[in-house]
Length: 371
View 1 (cartoon, rainbow, N blue to C red):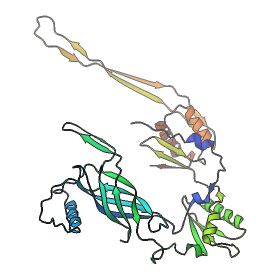
View 2 (view 1 turned 90 degrees about the vertical axis):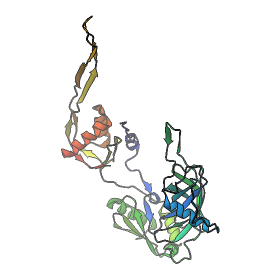
View 3 (view 1 turned 90 degrees about the horizontal axis):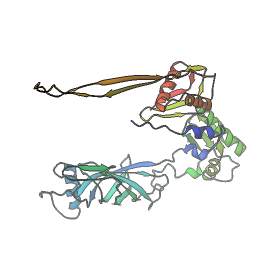
View 4 (view 1 turned 60 degrees about the vertical axis):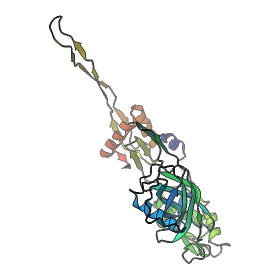
């Protein structure tokens, strides 16, 4: 298995410790979010790669229902086409989408269709979790994968049973004026809440202090690690939209807990800048075992009426490189930790084992999260 080492250590070491980010990039505004939409539809125009109507009864029923809308009765007919496929259509409706806005949709087969290449999605209503219809999707798909072959072999690249339609859905019902819009009066609100994407007590407090310093009063307060409440001061000349536009440009230095993220499947290691290691000694051995086969042919003597035999011969070699004991001083930084482990010449896979051993010894002052 190929080991992928994530080369972010140099980037993190080159980034100043006091780097700050915009509030806009650190929070989500309460009630301002996307809505997931889903729909069920049919893809037509496939070149014999669609569902088998005998095996996919739902496709057969859907095709009959669609044809009945055009006054074509096929209930008693024995349909045997493979140019149609039943699909699920998914999309994300951005906040404040107005009527006529176009959004992208993803189309995925749910039957035994082998490919959606060249298919066209028939008009499909898209619903939210409450069953309300917000958009209608239709159009020709773009499929990144393909599948081809003959009687003896088949080659498949990507996923040919899933595609995408850019701007494939048209928003039919705007949020405003429906009585269902929680954002309709956002401009007139006296307060709202900012939700931190990475909850932290220190970051929330710094964010509130930065807003209060800019506004010159008590315009914000940290309610918990993930929420900062924003108030519109009486002296502010503007509505809540104007206030948000100014506040989200303020910069705050985000704080983060000391954490080491490990993905053993790929050999990926990510360490935060606050990771510290107490004094510890590390020795990493390099054991190599080589097994080689050298079979020997044994032939019988002349006129012995014997048979030639293959005699197995196996050579096993064990080598272990001598490694010096490395010492990491007390409370070393991320830079010193990375340099120390690199000096031992360890691979990413070995580094994962070393970090887990340091944590077990109580010398790693950080949490280890294994993906």
